[in-house]
Length: 89
Image (cartoon, rainbow, N blue to C red; front, top):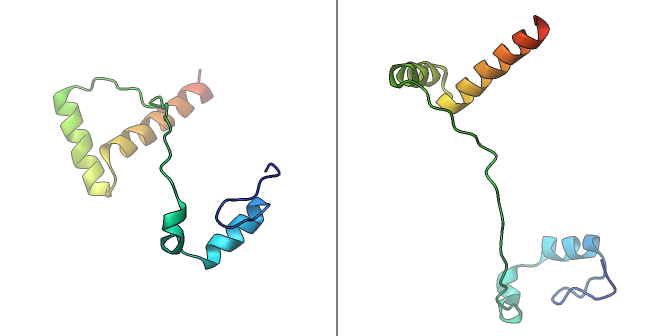
């Protein structure tokens, strides 16, 4: 942290800021805040692959029976298959 103090807590370290906000409520200091503008750039970490309609329906049914999402089940199965492929080239 630079030499400047935190505007509201007047803390000089991140630990002091944390300690301050552990015992204070922003509602009590709302008039001291000001709007902030910022941009967030995010790139998806997801890649989509087409799955045949009937196969996708079977996947959803099996996933529901296991109490997980179809996406989770598909990823688990793909991970298992990739492990098998690398173990038995």
